[in-house]
Image (cartoon, rainbow, N blue to C red):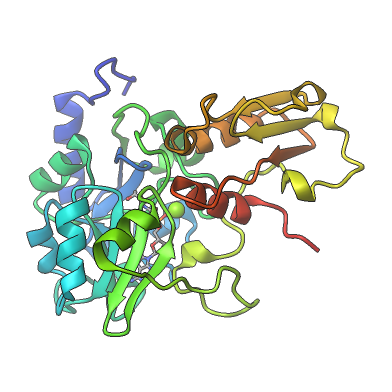
Length: 328
Ligand code: TXA
Ligand code: MG
């Protein structure tokens, strides 16, 4: 299971992954966003293992990955017209649609008993081949322990989940590097449940204004998408936005996570520049790997820029917000 220069797993590994999925196993696989931890979505016992491996609460539903919009229609029902417009424009791609669920196809454990189901068609040849050859939809959350930083390489998956997974398919680093944008579509309209790899502006250019749920949920309130839980995507090292970092922190023992080269770079022990040219797409692609590198240095704190709240900046800020130490 080495990294292949072609960024494609060997045929024998892919064939093994297909057999494992068919037999109820759990396989990590690359997508264009982050690595997923996949199992046959129609097999409740296989899906239960995903929750165990991730230590994920059972109330947090999974995304079902399918090979085409037609396959999505087999598990969702009464899709509003916006769903077909978005599917046509963005699938395969980093968009997840939360739609009314057809009860008979996907078991309750996948949707946490909700009347909706989250579906997406990933834009990655390995993911698509796995789904197609296994012949079943694949339920997959990100392949990391619940609440921690998402994996964008096969090595990240092995570091965090290791031997618990039956097989890790190595497809090289994920292109987008940040999770899919999640949009709920129902009779009450459209809602952005998670900003992600497709900017909300692009989505609104297709279906008009999309509702935004409250950014911060009241303590104890149920999350519309549990990825909206306040603490998520977290590094073990405390992370602060630069404006909120305590003055007493010794910058010489801190790391800096910055879009472009910061003026105060010299003060820090380590620095990660996400895009020298200030490109948000490049920044999103490297975000989680940079967070992991800084997290591995035993620093007192990570001090992060706040990004512009547009395009992929919205998704980056969302992840950093949830990783950050809550403000008192
Ligand atoms: O890019 C991605 O979306 C990656 C790759 C592997 O596809 N997957 C991913 O899955 O990020 P996960 O489980 O880490 O995040 C999925 C989010 C969770 O916050 C979950 O609560 C939400 O989707 N979700 C799933 N089904 C839902 C539903 N029926 N209603 C509302 N939220 C749902
Ligand atoms: Mg996740």
